[in-house]
View 1 (spheres, rainbow, N blue to C red):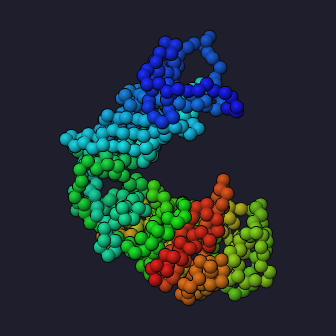
View 2: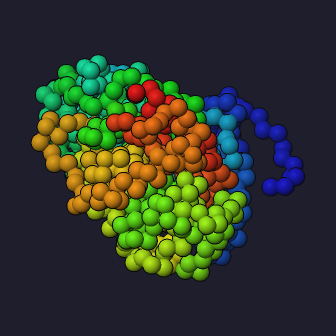
View 3: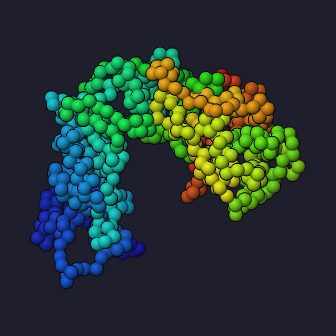
Length: 569
C-alpha cells in the first residue's frame, strides 16, 4: 500500500450508473461505497482462456474490501441468498446458514449497516424482527466480516464463518426460533437467592449450562425463543412437532444458547453450591485485572463457592485450557517425593541451567541456589530443581500422578455444567521435562488448579461440583489413590513455607498460619508477558486464579486469590 495516493471517496444517496453497472449503497458511518454488480464482487467470473487476465495478488485495497462487503451485505439485506453466498469463499455453507436465517430463525425486515472498516475487517450492525406465529420481537446486534483474496483467481471475497451471521455462532451451529425444547431454570445460590447475570455478570455461561442439563429435570415449561443450536444438536422446535434431542458430547461441553425470548417459559428451580458473598467478591476482584479468572472451592467436599471471569463471553474459569506454569510444581513435587527423588529438608540441586532432551532450561533471571534444600527451591520456584530430575522419570510418570492422585485429565468430571478437566499428556524428551514445570503440553484452568491445591491440603481428591450429585443421581469422579501420609505432610510443608517466606508471601501476608500457596508464570508463544497464576488454601477454602498476559503470578493473580480467601474466612 505504501504512500500510494488515492482519490477521495464520496458517499452517494442514490444508485448511480457507472460504466453500465448499477452501484448500490449500504448506509453506515465511513462506508459510502459502491457494490458493482455485473462486474463487481458478487458477479460471476466469466471469460475464456484467450482473454484471461493475470491473477491479482498482494494486499487488498480499501476499495476491494468495501465493495466486497457492500455486495454481500446488500444481497443479504435484500433476501438474495444466492448473491450473498456468491460473495463469500464458502458458497454452500453461506447459502445454508443465510437460508436458515429467514426460514428457521424467522428473522425478517433485516437492515444491515456497515461501519468504518479496520484493515480487511468491516464491522456492521444488524436490526430486524423475529416473527414466529403470532409473536414478534425486535432483534439487534453487532457483527463483523473479513475480506480475503482467493488464491486461484485473486478475487476478493467475504471470508465465511458462521459468526458473520451472528457472533454467538460457531461453525456448524444454526439459528432456530420456536418452542425451546429445554425449559428455563431459576438458579439459586446456596442460601436460596436467585442467581442472575444482572447481579453476577460472569455467570452467563454457567446459567446456560444449568438450563441445558437441568431444564427438563427441574419441572419447568419451555417458552418460545431464538436460540443458537450447537453442532451435534437436533432442535426442531414446535415448527416440526418433534421432540428435541441432543447428543451428549455437544450438551456436555457447549450448550445451546438463548438469544431472544419471544415468550417466557415457566422455569424450574436448581440450587447450586455458590456462596453469594464469595461470588460477589470474585466478580469484583476479577474486574480489577483484564483477562482474569478465579475459582473458590471447599477442599473438604469439593463444593464450588465462586467462579468469575473478567470477560463474560467464555468461561475460562471452568473451560479454559492454559499452561499452568509453576503451579504445576505441586503435582510434580508430590511425584518426586513419592519416588524418593526429593525431600523437603534435604539438599536439592538448583543450578542456573539444566539441559534435557536437547533443550537448555533456566530459572527466572538465571538465579541459582547453592547447597539449598528442596523446600528452598520450591518456595523460590526453581525450574532446574525439577528439570534436573527428568532423566530419572518415565515419560508417563507425571500423567499417572495427575490422573491417579489429582483426578485430572480423564474427562470425567460431572460438576453440573461443562468443564475442561485438565490435560497432562504423555510426552518425551524436552517436552516431558517442560511439563514438569507446567509448560509443554500441560493445560489447566482455575477450577483444576483450585482442586489441585485442595487435594494437597486434604490428601484426597474431591471432585469439584456446582450442583449436588443427589439432584440427578450422577456419580462424581474419583481418583484411584490418595497421597501417602508422608507425601502429603511434606507437600503441605512446601506450600506453607512458600506462602510464609517464598514467592507467595507478599500476597498471602496476614492469612496464616493454616495456609499454603504456589505461584506460577506460564510463557505463551507471541505474548510479551507470561500468564500469571496463583493457587492457595486457607482453612477449608481453596482458590486459584489466572491473569492472562499479566506477568508474575504473585503480583497479578496473587492479590485476587488472597482477597477471596480473606473474604471467605
